[in-house]
Image 1 (cartoon, rainbow, N blue to C red):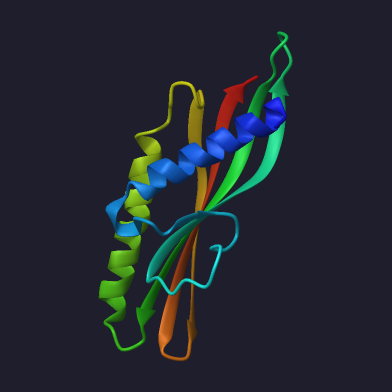
Image 2 (cartoon, rainbow, N blue to C red):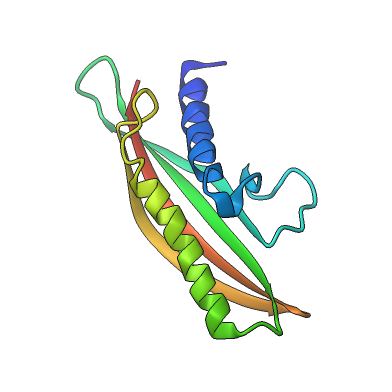
Length: 143
């Protein structure tokens, strides 16, 4: 594998590892825009690399800013209390945010991780309400 591909894959794998350590999402954290097979999990996280911006060219190594989208998905029954479910969803997203903040620096993987934005959406289909939070993060590293 190329050096650039190896570095980017290592960052993606690092993000998947730290997010999978959140007990609410154990074994329901996936790389890409969908799980590898049909999964009917109440809670899941999807992580996708969006962009690589080379920011500084001062030495032989460039500083890269990798942009990732982290999608937190939460499905509830329409009969459940909407306020309680929204509170639960906000708490779940907060756990992801806290986990990312506690890994701003990860030796050997990246120099700096920043949360740029969190967008919240929801929708209803049949007997379910779907809550989504799109967390946009930047990860800086040098190679």
